[in-house]
Image (cartoon, rainbow, N blue to C red; front, top):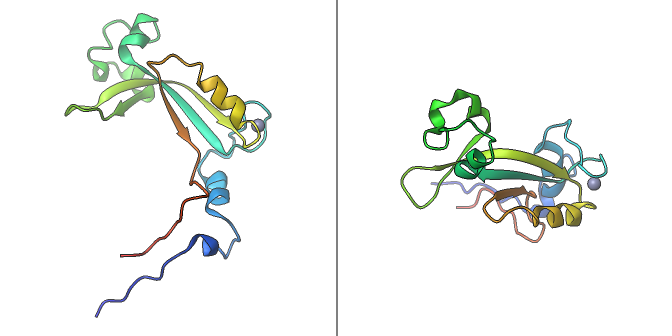
Length: 139
Ligand SMILES: [Zn+2]
């Protein structure tokens, strides 16, 4: 006999602490010292901009020759991000900048991100979408 785990619905998520998934994400997802880049309040969104290695080498961001063999250069290891492409091996990118934003400054952040060059990758962490249904423990 198998027992089904109880479903956790969005409305009863974290009822002990009286939090929605969005509030939980805003509280625990980012560093406690992170602040909105524009108004210095508590952030809800994080954006990370990543450059491909060849563009970073062309602009002198990383040492010459490191675009071909990035793993041989320990100096760039902390900002190296492997991103899975269509091939068997991941493509490496350089994390160049990170910005936090609150809900009020979201539009301003997105208009700034839209001005980034087309070859950049922008990772936006907004947390769970409030229109999505969250169910945990269903088979
Ligand atoms: Zn703000």
